[in-house]
Image 1 (spheres, each protein chain N blue to C red):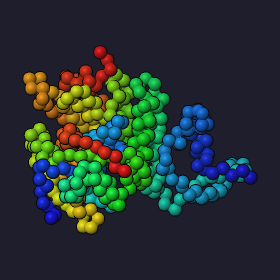
Image 2: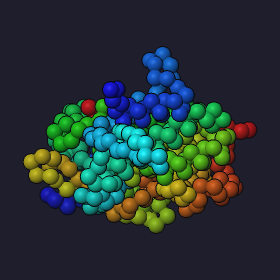
Image 3: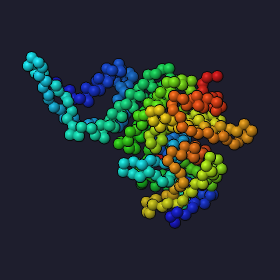
Image 4: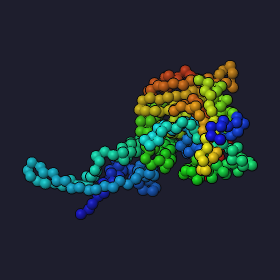
Length: 219
Length: 147
């Protein structure tokens, strides 16, 4: 009898779902991006479902877990969400530099996982918020992207001297921002603005901060 | 001695992992933010640095080599990680004169006996001090590979 490991099955489903193959020459299979997915021991059970007419049918491949929901489950679930969001960025061709952004996020995720395999790599809420922001503001230049010690995304746009716009994506909705801009009368000095906002209104809030020239590709 | 203030003219080195660097390998503000509390760890109280002049090496090259040795013997060093070099006086002056709350940072010797006697810390930071981190990164003088 052909036995199908649950993880293989999930991988096949994922491949089908995204319509890509994992051949070396093709677009890489999404799971191949992440270096530190640990294999989970899977114990197979066999269940029988009896229908109203008394016919028995087998349900196989259910994983048995002593603890119904472990930290490992949570991490794997979050890892999968992060993968999916990175994949969404990669295929969103209307987001400028979509592939470069996705590659950068993968590199950051892998670096975080390499140092601490039990960490979330990148915070799911933060990357979701970042993705929503990118979808809405397609005129922005490619930012410098790093991770905070909380594994949140921190995106910065820099112009010349004393020109900085940084956004910390702290949750699904909330962002914290910092703006440095030159003092027009004393260009060697800077004006500092900072605050809290929601991802949907941030750009309205900072619209008159004089940052447009160095963060936008639009003339 | 522990808690000695490091002189303004001296220099400190900060380890910057890959995810705190820009695409072109420059340290970014996230390299100067405190770690939050974790399940088995309290939140960081200070930013870990090494006091370069304490090492008593004759030049910058040998100091960097010594810092690399200390890192190697203390933790797993990332292949693309960097060492950021800062001047103590410049960091404190920049933050004191430009931060909205005129923050006075302290850079104190905080030796880890036998393992890392040059270990020191930047104190008086808070969690998610984004503006301060943005100011500190502007004072980075040089960066070197951490391996």
